Length: 422
Image (tube, rainbow, N blue to C red):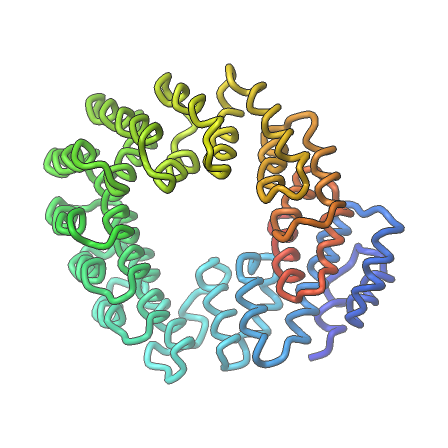
């Protein structure tokens, strides 16, 4: 499989000198070329695609799985490439196949993988094909597989089929799986069932008490949805939100507010009170959870709490509060000035975050702040810097990040650019 097959058969628009340098892995030459020319969005897309393909082609055996994993989020753009990679029966091939299956570009049954494959990664792909009601016993058996990737694939399959017979097994996974993130995903899978009986929803009530915090929080989110149809679940949810101040209660309150237009007024009212109270008196983690996930629509108590937090001693809390204030009309100008001051401090660890917030809010001074930060050389989060460049249509600035010395950065930024071009 030659590099020419990967690059020249697909890329068509970017300047040929750039493509030849990419094909030869001469990123210094690519960087020099980029500094002397302007790029269109199409040029940037093609350059990113060429680099993604080149990096995967030249990756050594030990790095190939990493490159596939980094490029998996943009599998739709690279589906032809991933179809070639999956022809090899190794871990990287299995990761490519799973990416295509979960993205919907390949039917799991067409992956030619077996739920009993000796390679656990390919076994996971086989389990992901168990999306029929008739596959239920195999799917439920896979939920108990010793390998965590196989169990995750079984959860994915269960989410596709929404078989009510899977629900008791999913409850067991939510309560007993040795991996916390698998337990959380089991609750999420149940949450996405179109119809959830009271028996199933309330079977998780123990998980709202003494279970691990992430599981309790996800159960609260599930209850917020189930409470729309069930008075019994609604009563349990009300007791949770009105009870002791903790993250599960907060998560339930936030979930109710996201559904506030269809929830009962008394539940919405107590949820708003819980969120405002926690914003004022909660822990740092609780405050950040609210500032990053609360619905955009706020109330006077929430807005007053934001004003109190704009001068918070904790820098991350302060920046998060200012970000939210950008979307409160009466507070926007004040927040923009404060964020511009932070963005101007190029060595400030929150300078990039402040700049991206200004870009997202379309503030007029955002482009100048971004350019100053991008040229200073202090930013370590190259993907975030690339997002800023793309948002401002600064294609040359984003393209330069494709020449980073790290193959991981190059592939991640390439994938980000490809997804932005969709």
